[in-house]
Image 1: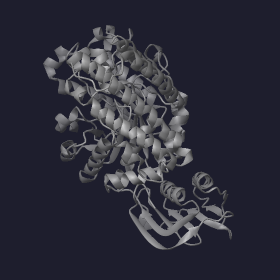
Image 2: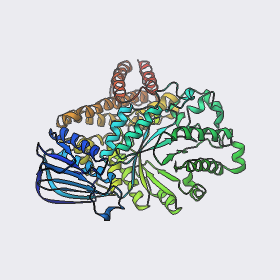
Image 3: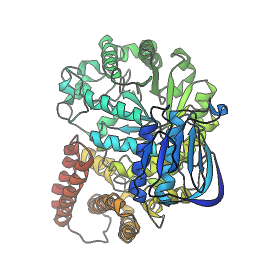
Image 4: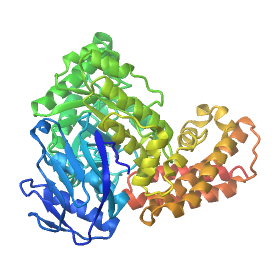
Length: 609
């Protein structure tokens, strides 16, 4: 049987445990969370095995599963430790605290999901090597999930023992008296956050506030009220662009009101969370000292400007009794200066290449800086994430976390260029992070893919993830489509069109194989798998659009004779289905911006005829 993440120690034993229809789950009532955990287990048993077991607070002759706080004192300083014993007549789960009990319940759920009513006997002794195992979800640059979907995602994160969640916010929170910023969006409200924080606590997940407070304030700095706070107020008059949103819009650190604005937003947002952390972001301050702040930069340098501004924000967070976090991309170039920040500060060391090196982790460790390593699920700019790329990146960054003493791993899921990918498609990448950050043991790609296919998708062939990992990084996909629409042919290279036929072949091969795999997927999971067909169709259509553009721009001969008008109609029909998929899990948010791109192409392609 598979257990994700792989436990510290598993001892297989003779015999089997047969789950009886009239069995009882007994809880240790001295642990106030035990009933809730038992209820989660009861639900799993009902859905996986079809049995309904009662929950009681006293041992009876029918007790077949017991949950309690009975772990030896030697485990008391080991966070989230548990011991699970499966014997022929009974299952015993013991932990030192509620967090360990919850982790053990998740392991038992995975065994029941696979074995139903028959579980092989074993003893599992387990605890994590990395204390914080997190997930970072962009809910700003295109897609804002519905609250009920965020709750479902919390449940899924906890199933794989993830214990921290951060939501990336630029403008997508409904700050009072801030309507000019969020008026054309469907933002999260204070009530949403308070409810989600409560829900995360129930599932042993720390919901950490994360708010852009220096760079990446695109919509804020385009408003009439706040544009004066930025380095380039005149850019507010430029039309919206997915590309420009990623590159500009930094607060002017030389403007006193900028610091006051950042502190005010931090204070308002912080009060909604029970977490002891606050992520200031403060990354990619590309424009710092290049516009309104140029004179200050010439006098003191951009490094000093950055440190002064971020240092003041960090000290402000500490003064509120919280631990500040910030992305480490700026400060990694002058790490010795991090000593000027409060000692509590945690640098989030991100890097997303498949061949990411340990250099940054090594630099932070040598400088004595607290750090998390932050890989990514490789879903941004893609209709379907690059699964193989995410595996290679995540396994390296988890290894670096162990090697260089990082306090945590924060696996990221960004939404560049509209967050085009369906959120559920990032699950494989999420599980890579969960699996490799628990004990630091890296399983081969083929092995972890089999495990995810069975445990997560209930795929009897154990091959779904590896199939999807065969998709190409398109020469002309969503990213290139956006850049061509916004920047024209100056964004193009001939090589991206020369591989269109190869891309189409791979996409169609996976598409065809997926149809044949669906019968082997558990019925309850088939709609999730079928959603990939929508993503695959979009990949195919944009590849075909790229083929037509390649002929127009570079004279590359097409092997397929589809005409522009026909392709435009197919694109519009596909987007009708895509919108339904989006609305099934997400608020309306910036779907209209994606629609603008798709319909621009439909109109453009009709000109080819």
